[in-house]
Image 1 (spheres, rainbow over the protein chains, first blue to last red):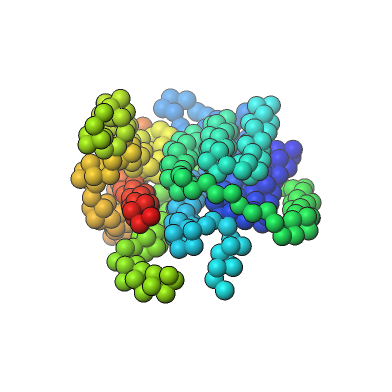
Image 2 (cartoon, rainbow over the protein chains, first blue to last red):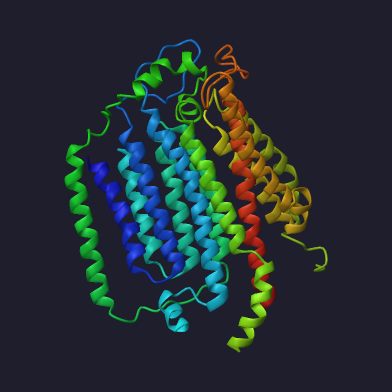
Amino acid sequence: MALYILCTILFSLGLYCILRKRNIIKIIIGVIIAEYAVNLFFVLIGYRVEGRAPIHAPDQKILNMVDPLPQAIVLTAIVIGLATTALLIAIAMRIYEKYGTFDITKIKELKG
Amino acid sequence: MELYILLGFMILGAIIAIEIKDLLSSVVAVGAVGLGLSIMFLILKAPDVAITQLVVEILALIILVRATLKKDLPFSASGRWFFNTIITICFVALFLIVGMKCFKDLPGFGYPIMRISSVYLKDGLSQTGAANTVASVILDYRAYDTLGEATVLFTAVIGVLAIVRRIGRKKQGKTIGEDDE
Amino acid sequence: MSRKHEKGMSLIVKTITRFTVGLILLYGIYILSHGHISPGGGFAGGVIVALSFIHLMLAYGKETALKKLPKNVASFFESSGAILFLGIALLGFTGGYFFLNFLSKGQPFRLFSAGIIPLCNIAISFKVGAGLFTIFVALVLLTFEIGKKK
């Protein structure tokens, strides 16, 4: 229970960074931190006390394995997160090239 | 116990990454958070996810450093600083309270429900022949998930290539450049 | 210290890179081919294969790496990985339904076992590795364009 609350605090730090900061790179960093918190929460839910990794061995019968389903979901989510981060960075670099700044309030001033 | 220490280290790294002024130091702090997450996956008995998180973190760090190199600009903190911060902190605190109420309905830490996963663990070796149960889940039982992931990755690659394309930009660059100057 | 020879990083980095880049590529191939009997799989193996080429590019400059794996070839590998994965899925219709494990399971805990799972791992590693390398090359070329303009 305490681990869940600490994980939510990590997610709220990312949310605060997205809402409050004005630098685009800081906003991307907030997105990355929130994504890490969500991935960690999935794996925390699937953990089992005294569990083993979900991989069978040739000549022994293991019964207390951890939940493999959240691990399989997180495995695809990590690679998708990297691709979307790269897409965000490409957009940020084009914004820097056009306006010469990373500050979102300056971008709004220059446009109008 | 080591889970609490690692999670505290990650929260500390996240606070440093958010609040520091230098952009390059911020990116390095995010790398520290990701590596702590990788060790945490290893302790939580998820070696597949730990390997993937480690290599993906290195690649993301290289791309982020490449984007922020020599562009260290001071950003303004003007405007209604106090008002904005108070509103944001109120919203985040509301989110935290609602989240903590939701945690009462979840099963406790260390005792998952595993209604479907017990079938995967019991019959996975005889039905698919793969010793790694995670591989048999992502490529046999739930292969549609992987197909959707491949589609998202393909779309992201096409999006990046369309954003950084050079051919269309040169034609527009002349006209816009003349207008701006 | 002539500037003419310095394309990329210093001599120490280049020498170490020449020794290690093959080992990194081999480790990536090992990870992706043993994904069904040990931790690893197509995602991690593909990213490690992409990282070996990125290592070469960071140490030697972009011309050497792009000579070994041009951008069009990487894009072709990415599309062919997607087609291969979808083709394996469609071949399942020979036995009944989409994503059917139609090959024989074989003996467990061997390299050639588990039906279509190793083939799917190879297809996904093509897709992930070539896709991430293409993204990195595109971002690096964009950075060079900006530097040239200023």
